[in-house]
Amino acid sequence: MSKERWSAQDLDREGPKETTVRQARIEQGALNFSPSQAGISHYANSMAETSYQSEDAKSKISTYSYRTDMRAKLLQEIDGRTINNLSDLYCLPSDDLEWARLDKQHTAIILGLGGLYPAREEVRAALAPQEEETKRILDLGCGTGTWATEMAREYPHAEVVGVDLAPIPIDNEAIPSNCRFEIDNINLGLPHFSEQFDVVHIRLVGSGLKNFEERMRDIHSCLKPGGIVIWIDADFDLYSTEKFEYHPPGTDDNPGGSWPQRVLQEMRRACLKLGSDLHGMESALDAGLWRDPLMDPETCKTGSLYIPIGSWASHEEAEAAQLLEYAGTLMRQDFIDAMKSLILLMVKAGWSKNDVEMWRGKLIEELTELKIHMAVRFRLAWGRRTPVPETRSTQGMPIAGERPDSPSKDNYPWFYVYDTEEAALEQAEARKKGKAGTLPPLPS
Image 1: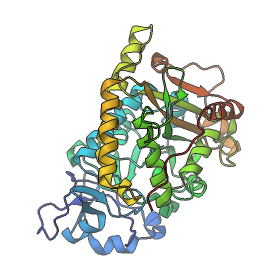
Image 2: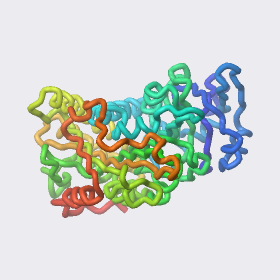
Image 3: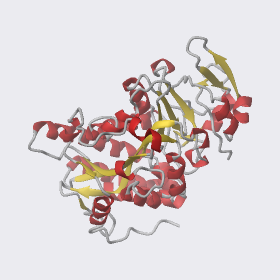
Image 4: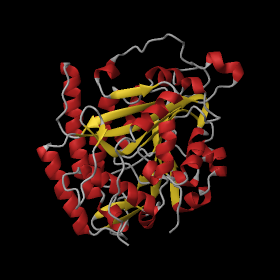
């Protein structure tokens, strides 16, 4: 299968329907590659040969409309679900059902973070307007495009670029003029983005990455000096009650275990079997960015965001309790809906559809009864690229002793930030407690 890189485009829905592949509900406008970007893009020539360009004199936005036969190169339909056609590793769908799930997940995460991102001082400092410099934001694995478009509205002076394996489900009219989207596979490398962005955001893409150390190096190289990178990814183990203790998965030998735990751990095994470097992601993000030669260690932190699965959590403060309940309700819906999206991945790993349907039934039963109180953890790591010495004091680096201008993140009680590498590693070691045991062998 050809693995190609595309600039964002208008999908031509009015042309002859030569394929039955369902299309994203989208007409996308995009800035074209600059001449320097096009010159080093691996697939610049193929893009020029398969699309046409028109330019709006007012907006200076270049629009691409792919022929119908190009759609089959972007998307394929398997068992009634639309899947990206650029990566054999990432098997989750790209269709209405999945987009609805991802938007629920997005809302739950920003409730926990108190906004679109952690490290608000650092992000706002990195994006503070400066004369004769365009601030730029990169969202890798942008999914539905919601985070990117919301950032474009929050920072109208900045350019926002979203990148994903499939078109986003947003009508062109709803995309802010300072936001564009590209279709790309991060595993191919990102040399055309080198040192171009003040903020790089990567959320929940670890399962689709190979050679995580190399991909992390590629992504950090996209930062301008002084720019900040924010990693958010899943912990593929779940934790029980407010003490966040490990709870073993459900199996034939342990029917009283947690079935959401079983599903998430089977997802990890399936991704690893298909070539994902999930172990590399897990260890790298939990250890933080302090030792990365590109990063300023004084700005690095890690974090753990726990979100209950279901509305079981409580808190003595009313606002915190409300946030836990709302986020937990969304996360419960996310887990239930995810079972439909995981079928293809599990089948590729060797499990039968009957096995997956059995797990789905047990998961729904557990999340309906809520006898076992489970929470999902999102691992975070962030830091700023070391600025060049002569501009260190003028690049908006946070001043020691400054306080956040909004305390909203403190209202959600289950977000923990670790300020040092030692604290991050200590917490990572503590989370290993009780995780002994094995799952049944994968089907051959």
